[in-house]
Length: 347
Ligand SMILES: [Zn+2]
Ligand SMILES: [Zn+2]
Image (cartoon, rainbow, N blue to C red; front, side):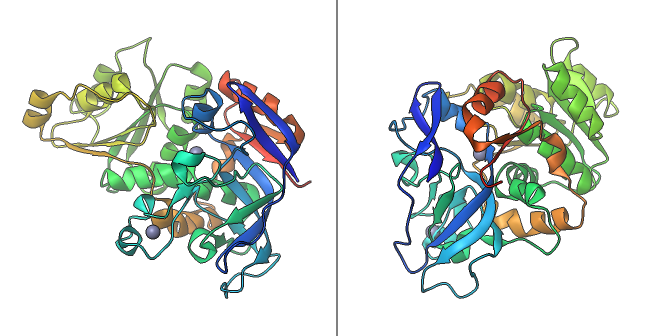
């Protein structure tokens, strides 16, 4: 089958790889129609996370069931499905608590041996383990292009807001207007935020955020802390969602949030430590949450919001490319010349 294959640092190619097969009664094979290129794929692309050359990339997908193991009763061939980017078993102690992102048998598609050694989704066929837990059927009428976002960045943003104990009426600041940040803007407004501000340095991305209903704040042309206070009756945002990752933006989030406010960090970075501002956080009485997305927990709510049209994340798609043009897609996305790239695996 055709698939996007990692070859080495900043080198991806589209080539032939052996197709997956059903290995367990709870496996399903999915014929992928659309696959996304995610910001976290760029960590692999840049060699920041070890991945053996020849590995298939990708963890965002939507498609149709091709085959099911004998233990699956609710899925059948031709069902349209989407699934979380990370897999969970559904039965370990963490899954039983609903902490699917901590599953003891979990992993991430296309993320190599450190993350469960699962084949990636930028491929014609994807093997999904524990498919009764890791696939959802698309609600009737929901377009695949829209549904794809439930598997990763939209549910990540939605979960990040809930981790920050989002409440309707909140004044929310989102740091980073990349794909996850823009998803957070959409989700916060759909959930009833009274105001959403977005902080970034890329003019084009700020314009996108503004078009979705956010107040754009340019991090270099003005002081973002002062501006966020000015937008909130001289208080600061109730909730700051940090969607970049790294010490500088975490520090900004903690400085910006109002006394008694909440900071939720979903950005991914591999800085090992971060100087936490202990004294000011103590005095300000801040709640701070950091963690990777728990997509299984939110995907059904997110699919309902997508089916109702309250969320329209496909508006951020800047490029739809045939699978064969995946190398260009990675390069464009890496240079921030593309906001969201979808690969048309099946046309
Ligand atoms: Zn991702
Ligand atoms: Zn589990």
